[in-house]
Length: 218
Image (cartoon, rainbow, N blue to C red; front, side):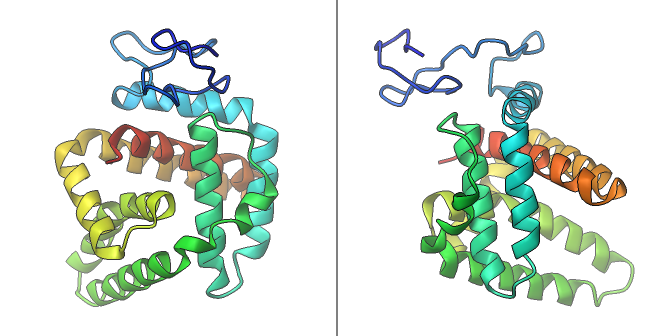
């Protein structure tokens, strides 16, 4: 795909030019009126759905293998990083999802491990509080999740990741909340359909988050 601004060649489904950063039209994507690709939750959802449909086979295989290896303690943090990095690759139109992607994100293992452990500890402590503890734990998960994508993408430390996630949500709370809720519902539907459903819905939920991250990344 040629960039209309600088005429640089880009991957077929790229959203932005790799050379100058200009937005690219994506053939076959129908964006609701009033929303450019990547602008607002409706546009981001449409792009996520487009990438999901065009890469469904590869995403399903990637998710299947991820589920088979994600039970391994500690190593699963590296596999989570690899899975999300593959999701970001698809989101950016940089290539097809590959099983090997799961094993190519160990560079951010340390930062992601610390981040996840701290969130788990904080969530467990909040859940000890009667009634409001569960709500506070859910709110913490909402606030913490964007930082995971930043660590996977930029390998920043856990403090900077959480600060950025919090600032990003404060700047655009509506789209982040819709992202969180819709991705959770879609992934939940997959769980209701048991194993086969999860390998189809998990990548869509992750792509929705990937699109929101791309629209908000520093």
